[in-house]
Figure (cartoon, helix red, strand yellow):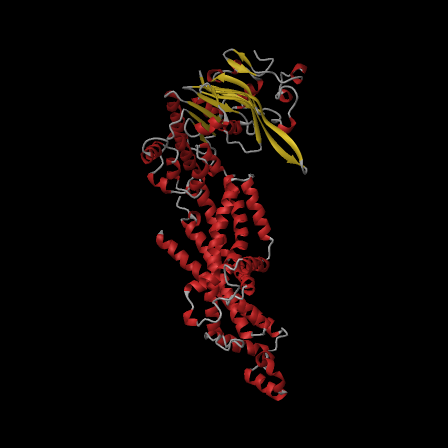
Length: 307
Length: 333
């Protein structure tokens, strides 16, 4: 049974344009993701593809002008907003993106300790700091005194000490040196091996490929492919969706060919397949309706041509 | 590290001292010029009702004795050097040294302003925080409505209203003055003084609350919309715990600074409230000095209030330096 399942999630924002005229911006549409216990799922995609919003939607911390539809289940039960409140920080933890997510007027050590739900908070915080190579005096520092890498490790610590079942890490690696990246990724691996699950939101595909079990590829607010990580290693034949293929080909160690064009803005989405305008394989059918996500070769894909 | 910070603090205070000195010189000069060019005739103000009995020769004699006939710069230097040696002159209406009048009046005003300052600060802060935490609910709307109404209410009008309700209709408090009439000075008790203080202090507090509450509310809304509060919520914190851990410290900092910087407004409000309640404070003395042409007292008060407001702003600056770790600790990393 999957520990966390997101089915047909849509997120839209109410916005006032020109006076009192209200428009609904749909930024995530029919998004599907499942997270199994004991595995690391990497969510990859360009910025603006709705990766961070997915994390916030799962935790129920979207701003008040956002409306959400679709079903999120956690451990088989629907994650209602009341349940979201109950599981935040206890069952599901977030590793946010930047130092701005730390209280500027509080010692970082105390901030990590507030995440500890049971046991000796000070001991847990010191242990995790040591593992992540943070000196002990760091706990007495304020966020503004941290370097970028120290801030990221502090943010990581808050999730590590919390004893949760699911960690959602939003871009945890940029700005870290390779040793610490490896340490962080090893921590995620170990965490998953204990029977928990990690959702690793990133645009660093290379790190994702090293550590993840499954890859979910996002494009313009929806999932275009969910595949085992092996499909992305080696040659690209096993990759199902043309966008994922293009991403793979854009990697430096592969063909290093960038994808022409850019991701559509949420307010100007094409009517058919969202990737059709940039797709080499696009046929007139692709422009008619957005394809549903379907099972294919032990993975999932949202493309009518995929084989 | 410590030593280095201490040196920085000393430099800071020296720099502020220099700024205060230059400010005072400028204020003295400008107000002296203003008074000189105003229609106030110091001799007429001095003689008052006995004008008919004083002939032009006698007036010229007084002018000569006072040095009023000399060039303006010479007069300014005279007055300035006297001020520097601590002599602010003698008040014409009270017939006492200006410094004594200010000292006595200021003590009365201080009691009034301090109580209003504390009450409006605390209540305003709490109201602002509650409104922001309950943003969009009826609690927020009531607080906002109250604040907007009061923010647009003139102090003297609020004073009159309170006077009518509490002193005239309900007769809970005396109508005015600082002490009961017809009682010997040595028989006046502390209770008497407090009773006379309550209504003007209430007026000042009620009006002051609006500003503090609206500022705090806005700041708190900013704090609640911040990433660190979002992250705290993602870790399961909510309600009072969230406010206690992250809201309070982040909103208290600007609130304290603002509160010190509000000294000037406080004084402005006190002038009006004291006038309405005939409360013998510095504000009332200012109005009297202005209306009755008491030049030495007026100039003395100008110097004194400049210092008062400057000290308020200085305390605001210092409070930020002491309380905010970002300016206190500098960059260690």
